[in-house]
Length: 140
Image (cartoon, rainbow, N blue to C red; front, side):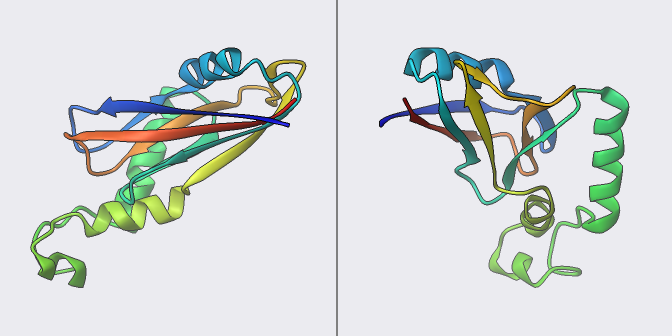
């Protein structure tokens, strides 16, 4: 069995965004030479997520609105105890928890084995700084 590891670095220029990272993951798969196996993609930061869904702007707007209703951005300690530490990103931690840390995608015949419309996204909830996503591929 072979394994391949790659980091995808990014700096999202605003606090929150959804970034389609499918092309970068597909490139990592090509670089790996693995034809059959599994591909793990995970955020290496506790205020960001990786998830699979449709690349449709209305849906992304709905995600943003829904997450803001669940965990509104409220700087300072008035709503979140975590913000007593001097941080202002408690909402980002909660949003990450809801959207998830990682995805695993089957690799079949050298391709990501997606269902219809599936794409891999990086969800940034506390941006404006450099962060990374890990791609780990194992197989033959």
